[in-house]
Image 1 (cartoon, rainbow, N blue to C red):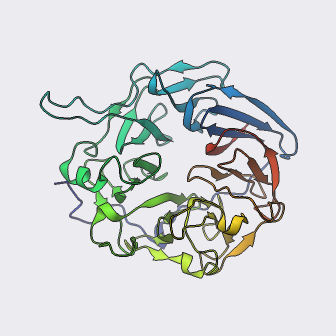
Image 2: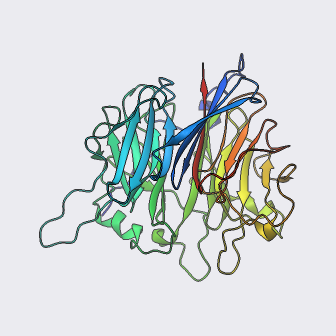
Amino acid sequence: MARTNKKSPTRKHGPNVRAKPASRPRRSRRVLVLVATRKGAWLFHGDAKRKTWRVEGPHFLGHIVNHLVLDPRDGRTLLAAAKTGHLGPTIFRSTDLGRTWKEAAKPPAFAKAPESEKGRVVNHTFWLTPCHANEPKAWYAGTSPQGLFRTDDGGHTWEPFSIINDDPQFRSWMGSEQDGTPDGPKLHSIIVDPRDSAHLYFAMSGGGVHESFDRGRSWSALVKGMEVVEGFDAATIAFHDPHCVQLCPSNPDRLYQQNHCGIYRLDRPSKEWTRIGKHMPKNVGDIGFPMVVHPRDADTAWVFPMDGTTVWPRTSPEGKPAAYVTRNGGETWQRLDAGLPKNQAWWTVKRQAMTADAQDPVGLYLGTTSGELWMSRAEGRRWTCLARHLPEIYAVEAAEAD
């Protein structure tokens, strides 16, 4: 059975230990937007005002790139989770902002099963997360099917991390590799508490949200309050399908979640999620994939709903795409569609394909399943199309550069 925490953690949550909110930016810096697609990756370099852009790419043309991430600890190292038909899944690393790349000597892979048993094989690496600031060469990776891996040498070699991959209880929560998710089940939303490198979260689709206070030696599930598809038992962790979980940079005791069954918020030390998506417009609903949190205001978050009715067409509701923002922790929501197509736009946004920069005002970026990259320099109040005709966009990340 999977080990769980039996005692309360020694580090306490709550308002008395809230991290000091991040200060407002002292000066504007150049913005780098990283776009991972079904057939390669692109880098968009913006000036400090985010008005002039220079594009680099494609990198890895023909590769499926699920995630492209800049290491915030040094501002120059990039990791790319890629896959081709003949090479299989791998990780590429660049230490010069993409001018040159080197493939991992040992990418994430499950342990070899005994000869008499059928083992699991990594289909692709789906998620990349830099570890804590005090672990400068360490990263976590989540895969499909669900697996958790770590590197301590900057991405050159990867090893299974914690008990997740082979523990019988976790394996039962993961379900089968044909669970209905179009591109396979996956482990995602790997989060490191900025106050404590031993405090970790991750989510599985399917398989719920999980938390560790001891660097992965033991885990406890965080699914209370989350709903599941009608007709299934919410007490069964395997039926929980978190789409994206985000921790608030200005208050690490608050998390937001976009789930298969709604939008949620969790305020620690509570272990029960509150469905804040109930306040979304009824004709739109609160089903979607991405979740974005303001870097300096824990009450402000954005989502991008999709049509989750009947057969789940995974398109914008009624072909009219829009982001929605809450500025009061989910009590109310406001539609943000200025500049976006008014009708006949039948695309949606995947769980990794919407993000924010740290500028003032915050810039938002989203990539669509039809290959368009949209941006807003004003926190979603007005949108501009930055690029068209890219391959289907899987992930968008924003970073700052000197």
